[in-house]
Length: 231
Image 1 (cartoon, rainbow, N blue to C red):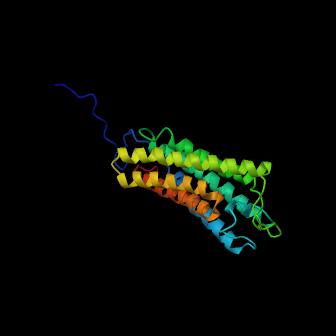
Image 2: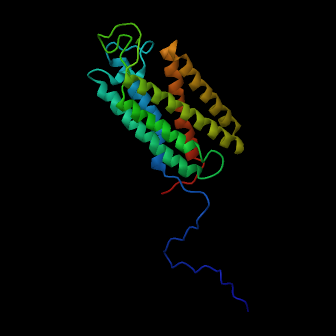
Image 3: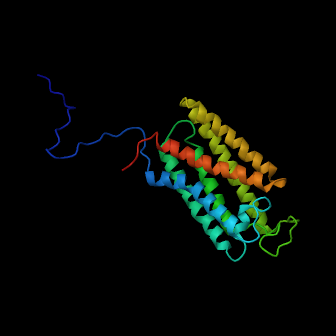
């Protein structure tokens, strides 16, 4: 009689059965939750400050200027916290994607986006357009060094985010999720358009940037529901 040597031993009574490993790496819900929360938290804190701080006007002032003035530390903290949350979300995203289309580029690109928030926390935007109170109403005529670094960091960060959306759009397409793929590409275009239009309208810039943050949260939430979770 032949005995199959591959038969697994019977688990003792009351013991939990072993789970076999799979090729899909489990995600960490805490890390994914950080990435999901980052955008809404940043926007909520920014909008509340913008509506309550004297002299700030969303049609004239960039949300980054909230880092200036006596209460500027609140927005600096907002940049730091949300930047760290985005980076944590990128780690969770890497575990969710593991391999396949988008797995190589999307997580590091989202990490770059999160790091740009930390740069914005260290290098403040220049005052202008009447904010903080006492600043001339006209636009800033020249950039300071810290203002230029702030602007460059934000531009690089949002371009990285758009590139991540394009990479994830290819993954969604490969999975047959055409709606998500199309929306990811459209959002990337809108964000870039917001940056291009920033010279003419600060509000258009804010709208594009906000859409990018919201879509990042939505995308991470979508990916978190389609992969196994680590408990």
